[in-house]
Image (tube, rainbow, N blue to C red; front, side, top):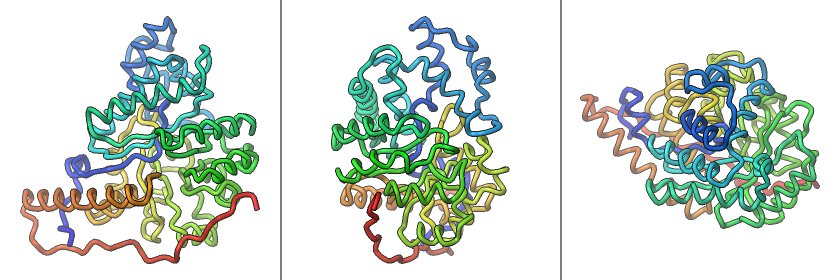
Length: 379
């Protein structure tokens, strides 16, 4: 039974959370960018935090996904050394832990960090070391999703898939396909995903953000995706929507980012609440903490105000995040139980603090669904 407490920013900050869709190169601290640029002799568009934020249009709406992605050219310019990658990863995981994220999956494309001669293995290890340092200090669980890039050659994606296989069980939790969606179909990268699936590695795909349901279908049926990144256009195909729901395929929602890239017209028209009410396993994520100017707490606050969510709704969303993590079943189940107990205790404390009557609403479990059938990629 969940007390009907007000959904405040304090409550959202206190609750245990996950961030399953977060790009390393989109989530630096502004101050860190300036310091790294000075250390490396790199000229940025501005020499102050305010100036840099304005030049990069931090937290602002962009004309398209492609325009939004231009900010990454600036962040990547300072992420070409071991030390910078270590620091960025450490600070990202530390920032997530500071808002009580218990788990963060950090995604990035090692191939984008080779401009100064680093080897892909060195890039992966630098990030993993930074995440491990944050874990030792804060207790947050942190792992990596290696990203292939849609607008790069399929051979490049295959090389990155091989890198993921090499680092399976060594900090790499899965594989992703990111980048400009329009005109760069996921099925072109099928060989990379076949290698991933053959090695029993988890995978997700950015799909249904800048292109329609066929992009999501490709992610599922050609690439064998276990989760869908963004997926805002899934609602346009009812049959595919039911397939995703029936198979409990999580959607990695990033609401503010979707508004800023033009994937949705405004927050009111975001399909998040429709997905939630329909029974889709929706999760809330940041996408890019710097470029979008957000945190998981902020995203939850925005959707809570926009759609009038209750404490019970928030609990269900957060539980979905823990259930969707790319962990082993037993590790995930243990994490879910621990998170649920912590959520219930925090909500009870907020209820007592606010004098909420004992009358409460039962936490609604997710609808029962048929067992997930095996999806064979490329057949």
